[in-house]
Image (tube, rainbow, N blue to C red; front, side, top):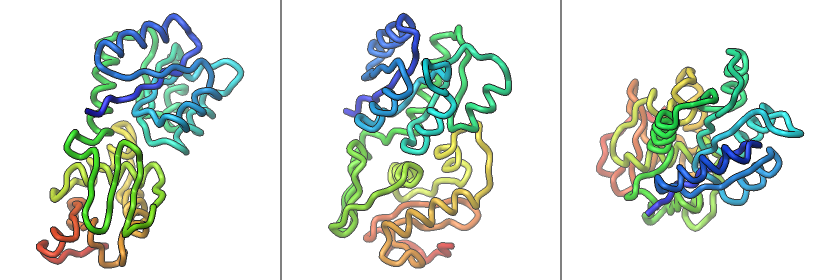
Length: 239
């Protein structure tokens, strides 16, 4: 069973302990950090599945820490802060946060937001790993091997692969992939998604122009096939 790891980044000791206790009762593994610097070290070491992040941190610029987290992790970031100004929310979302919750908050609502993000972010129990003759993926360890060679994927590339494998054989719509990669509050065009698709294909496909794994459903989205499935699939335009 995959136990989601949640990192709490907040200088308020009492709030951290309260959140820690409540999250533990709901089955989550919980990590804590008081400062942005410590949070970055914990993220590199443990790769949490979700981050509860207060932008008001001692001795550091919370917005900059948020940007640095996003450069190295694709985990959902929920900002939990006392700042109410609309421009603070805009800055946080632009810095890489996926959601913004103002203190004091309703516990039930925060928990529901956590569950919603983890449903989109985490693979299901049946997709904790994937393997065939050409590719092996360990989602828990974030390890990808293609034809015996270890492949290093960026956060967006890895999360995209995870989403597609979780729906193996089924088309995943453009809008659903975009929301999964950039969050429900972010809006963009299909060119952004196409860039990540092309980057991923270059790393896992023998011939990215004629992909075996990631197939395009024109005007709809993308779907993942193992090579054995691909030979049974109808030819597709993979641009």
